[in-house]
Structures are given as C-alpha cells and as structure tokens.
Image (cartoon, rainbow, N blue to C red; front, side, top):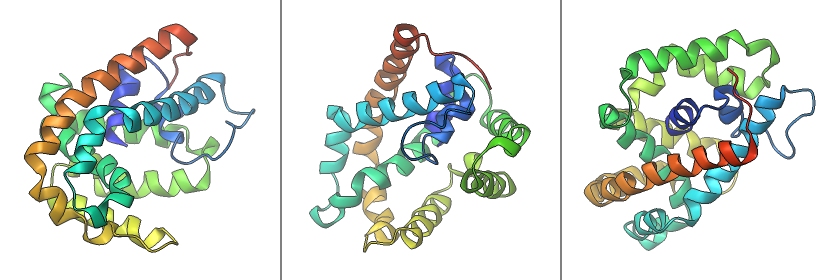
Length: 198
C-alpha cells in the first residue's frame, strides 16, 4: 500500500487509481475516471513487474520452504515496512505528511470508492497505519489480520519472525527492487500516456 502510494506520487499518476488496484477485481469499472482506470491497470503491471524481478525471487528464497507459498503476499507488506523505515532515502516529504495526504485524498473521494476500500481507508487513517508501518509490531498485526481474512489455510499469521530473521537480506533486495519498480512505473506512464489525477 505505502509503496504503491509513493510510486503513484513519484511517477505522476493517480494515487486513488493505484490504491484501487488492490480493491477492484476484473476490468476497471467504466464509470471510474480514466485516470483511476489507468491507475488500476498500472498497479497490476507493477505487481507483475515485482513478481518477475530477480530481487523479489531472492527475497522469497530467504524464507523457509513452508512459508514460500504465501511469501509474496507477506513480502508486499514487509517491503512497506522497509520503505517506511528508510523513508528519507526515497522521499523528501516527511512520512507523516505524506501519509496524511494519502488519508485526505481517499477521504475526499470516498463517495465514489468501493465499500471495501472505504472501510480500509477509515481504519488506516484512524490507526495512522502508513506511518505505523515503521513499527515491527504493526507489521506483525497487519499480517495476522490478513491471515484471518483469507479463507484458505495460510501461514501469514506466523511469518513475521522469519521475515525479521531475514531482514538484512530482504532489505538489500528491496534497495534494488524499489528503484527498478519506480523506473518501470515511470516508463509505463510515459509509454501509455497515463492520465494524472488524485
């Protein structure tokens, strides 16, 4: 969530659209503004790029075999933790101010957002979750909540200790992965004329 928000801001495309990418299934709804539709598509292309990147594969391999089925889901959250912890390396805007801007933008557009994103945005703002990603306990809690929402058996509730044990290596992977992902997103915006918007 945090990485997608920062990439949207730095690539010059729709913040709302990029965040909708985790909350909309199938084709982007045609009644959404074109910039939101572009943002949903970009979010999915970014996810595909990350999944195919060698640094992501190295992160997966750092976890025990029994955790790897759900590793990419867990790493998506853990990468946000690493981003929040090393925020000044990637953004000149203080994390607290950036997070407040994300909450405000989602609140401004909430009448047009799907209920699942409205609920999550309210929870996220009430807990200041984006800034809270710096705290290991918050990441462990987020993973546990995700485990409870997934209907299939999963290992997300107990993966945090393995992530923490592999932190240095995963952080090295992320330091390569994030700049490459941002460059990919920027190239997609230029190539596809993605429309900027909130």
